[in-house]
Amino acid sequence: MKRALGRIIMVPIGFVLAAVATMFVIVSLGQERIVQAMTGRGPDEATLGAARDLLGLAWSLLSVQTLLPALLLVIVGEVARIRGAMYYVIGGGAALAVLPLLAGMSKPAGVLALSPVVWQVLATAGFTGGFVYWLLAGRRA
Image 1 (cartoon, rainbow, N blue to C red):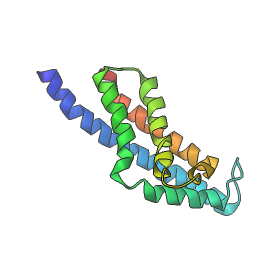
Image 2 (image 1 turned 90 degrees about the vertical axis):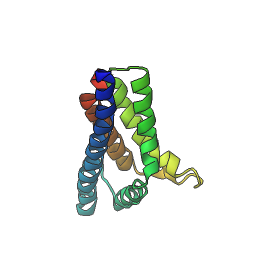
Image 3 (image 1 turned 30 degrees about the vertical axis):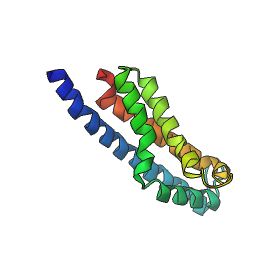
Image 4 (image 1 turned 180 degrees about the horizontal axis):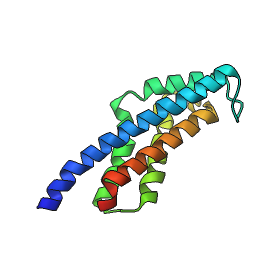
């Protein structure tokens, strides 16, 4: 009983803190990429179009629906008692990378034309969120 109560408390706390860490990475890494694009520097020749894509996508990430893929990942991990860090890290990256696809379902093919910089920022943020969740709650699933 005590273990179940601990899981009921730890899972939402871990999920919220992982979401906060994910948003922090999106904002900080996205800001870095935007500054690189504005100054014309960067390892991958980022353009202002990528910055515009990232800002547009950040606006669409503010809905509650963006939590559904990550929530599904956590529920499956908790029910199946998956304790592996790789499950949460790779799953977090995949859950965040699928968001532009879900957001663009009503649009013909515009979402696939996103800059690689945007996909990189999203995947990195998802990996971070998955790792933070695993550290806080996933290790003891």
